[in-house]
Amino acid sequence: MKVDILLGLQWGDEGKGKVVDVLTPKYDVVARFQGGPNAGHTLEFQNKKYVLRSIPSGIFQGNKVNIIGNGVVLDPALFKAEATALEASGHPLKNRLHISKKAHLIMPTHRILDAAYEAAKGDAKVGTTGKGIGPTYTDKVSRNGLRVGDILCDFEKKYAAAKARHEQILKSLNFEYDITELEKEWMAGIEYLKEFPLVDSEHEVNGYLREGKSVLCEGAQGTMLDIDFGSYPFVTSSNTVCAGACTGLGIAPNKIGDVYGIFKAYCTRVGAGPFPSELFDEVGDKICELGHEFGSVTGRKRRCGWIDLVALKYSVMINGVTKLIMMKSDVLDTFETIKACVAYKMNGEEIDYFPFDISEGVEPVYVELPGWQTDMTKMQSENEFPEEFNAYLSFLEEQLGVPIAIVSVGPDRAQTIERYQD
Ligand code: GDP
Ligand code: IMO
Ligand code: MG
Image (cartoon, rainbow, N blue to C red; front, side):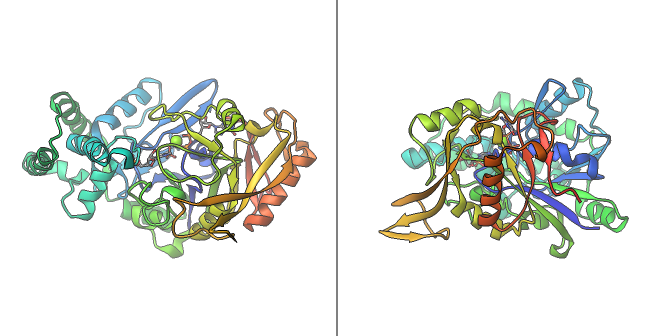
């Protein structure tokens, strides 16, 4: 068996959580491979709404095994809050949520360091989620990190050494903080973690594949936030791309099956950094309002703009996308015309490839398409799609060279239309 991977092609918040939930019945196992509680994956069904941060989005459909892979960074305090709330709402997790011993721990001092580094950057700050993601991955790469498996042996000593190192850095930055409450919750989280199966997830996942079981890998963030290929330095600190599933779960590249690339019918970004097709007018405000574009983790207003096909083509290439998923089509239901950025103008020249740096002097070149001006939110099948909507889909498929397999017409699980069923 091969694994399928679902990941974001834009700047995050494409709707990954919703679609992982929709696809879960087709799989035996769902696994997260990178990121941490910077993610906010929203799911809606039966008039209830859930926002998942560290827990994979495959926990609501059937009694499937869900895995937090080695590429994830985990904050035990936030994990405890998330998991206990889910259990209290009638979704038992204890025996079917497996956590890799190799996943790195986000310490209270990582969160404080995140804030301190952002403060030190002043106007150049990244606008992080403040969850300690960057400092935790920094410690992982510099070989100073603490892993989940460390909690099983001699943990206090390892924790004290790591904390002392962080405190020195914070002192050198003259950053004031109070760790008492954070640390108390964190230590309670460490004890809580021990109630879950702590596993060698690379063995487990490969074992499932050998047994013929199907695995869906769930990405967090999006390709434009990837540490290597995103709009650096305004990115997150992990590989959000397809290759991240290999390193974040221990899967060989030849075990990858379908790669689901997910995008919104338009584009959003939260936090600082370049966004060539961003809108600063009433059209942008309208998208924000109709799409309820406010961050699920930080509540920040998301910046909105038209779809950027230059960036999307790049994402499709980097990830080897085999199936596209278009989200939030309904948000554009009332628009008379819709624009799509098909090229950038840079230094007087028109380019259709994603360049090294998009931070300055990039002007979007748009084509305009007719809107469908039809309420799509109750549609059940592609046979009901208006002509103009089909034309938009065909235009995108032609530009991106990959079929759009799923269209989402609303936040609810049921508002999902599969095309090209195989
Ligand atoms: P993720 O981080 O990729 O899982 O996405 P988020 O959950 O952060 O953001 C997506 C938001 O859009 C959530 O509030 C979803 O409930 C909502 N959503 C998902 N699909 C659709 C859709 O097709 N239409 C509308 N209107 N909202 C959607
Ligand atoms: P999901 O999985 C959107 C952004 C932050 C910031 C940058 C770095 O819900 O799509 P970090 O805290 O990771 O160091 O912040 O990345 N960011 C996201 N934006 N969706 C996310 O996750 C994000 N996770 C991080 O806003 O600009
Ligand atoms: Mg999100």
